[in-house]
Length: 164
Image (cartoon, rainbow, N blue to C red; front, top):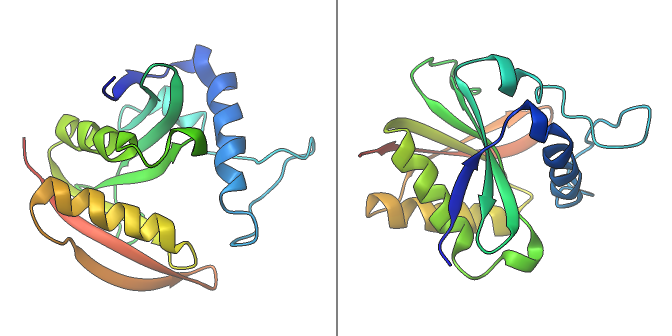
């Protein structure tokens, strides 16, 4: 079954928060993610996805709920307000290595033509390989790549233009 993007609403916040908790597990040992008083991963920007028109939350389904994508307008790195940012993206481990993530990313980029950036922690080589492959498959060649540091950690930022 192909990847399906389903817009998430405020009513879906508990489900998305649960998936964000699983997502945080992918970063265990790579970065210190903030925890709330209940010990769960605290994603403070999540409520902004229900009220800000330039933020979009999607569930990724194939035959079942398999992940999510959070998209926002405005480059976190350069501050360019025209650039879309794949703020967060997650495919549950049991749904990986079947092309679902690549197909879901392509569906997101098709929805929002224009300039894009994807930031990836350099300490997460599997994620970097995934994004380089997914973007190259979308644009027909390698994306522009830059390196930067934030919060004492090295990052790669992959930039490209999504065409309709």
